[in-house]
Image (cartoon, rainbow, N blue to C red):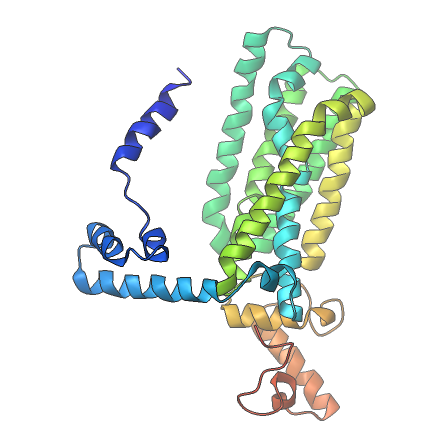
Length: 326
């Protein structure tokens, strides 16, 4: 039965149209327009969308990977730190290892029958799905940082008790509960690792920044998956999950210190906050401050120092400083 989904997908590809964006990148603009009209049955609107796609392609063409990976401004350096850091943090707590080796974990917990191991892997998958269903609608209501902090801290807690479960031989039931709980809270914070990188980069750099983050994420995932069995042999199952617990704790601290709240902020506002990252630990800017509070605090500092706001954002109208240029 496992072969049916990929077969259905392959059959569906027969009716899947080429991406208008890709067609425009290779100079096939008329074909792109025809496909856009299939998706947007309005000539005027389709033409507008095609023009917007062209603008994005032109912007991306003018930016290289060097512009993203070798940033020249404080804002871009902070954006790179956040994007790659989130990519690593998402996977370093061991979620991929838990998914791949759930039957092995069940075996270590006392379930020796393979059919039963696979059966009891289903609640873990269900918990993972439940976490996604909870996370996505709450992202815009609660914000990015609260979801990261809740997900990270609760991963730390569940991994700690999972480690104790193996160390003290609490039994299969407790192991299953803690594994499922871990996967639930992993999914509470996981989507943000893909969302925030899109919110801290401009259109021209966004695609390359996201591809770099995905690459780092997959490398981290593969490393964790490939080393899991070796870690369990070297540290024991309990020791391995305690290591992941410590990593989850470190990740949560990093979330609290480094990741800013991007909910409801424009790119210009995000850039302003990131560009003043050197003040994030001082009295002027805290990682979770909103743009308005940042600006108000900054204005107070300027007044106390006898400086005009124009001196902070560029000196003369129309000029850009390295801190504000994005």
